[in-house]
Length: 107
Image 1 (cartoon, rainbow, N blue to C red):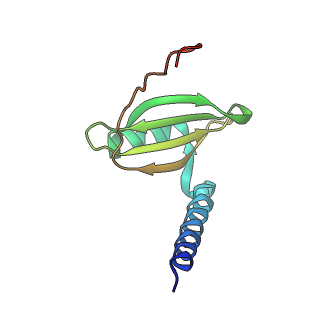
Image 2: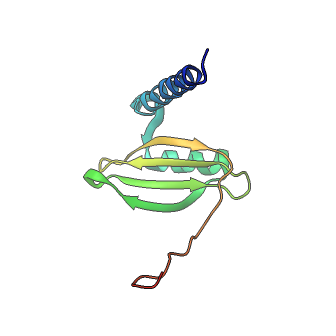
């Protein structure tokens, strides 16, 4: 097996796993609940609190929850109907605040 073939197999496997994860994340019965229920569960089970928030398409609210104690994190999307769906989660969360470079002609 050539290195290129091995890379293609690895890439294909990664894409398949990613597609399966995305499909699972879009299953409302498994990964969606009223917002209050989701927030309570994230706090009680993982010690996660909201770290950031943003407004997406169709006025959906994207939030990142994380725990400094455990390092776990969760990204959610809340629809205008109040249903919150888990989009992604993981470990090793770190809070960062990068400084933007100066604006203007200076390099």
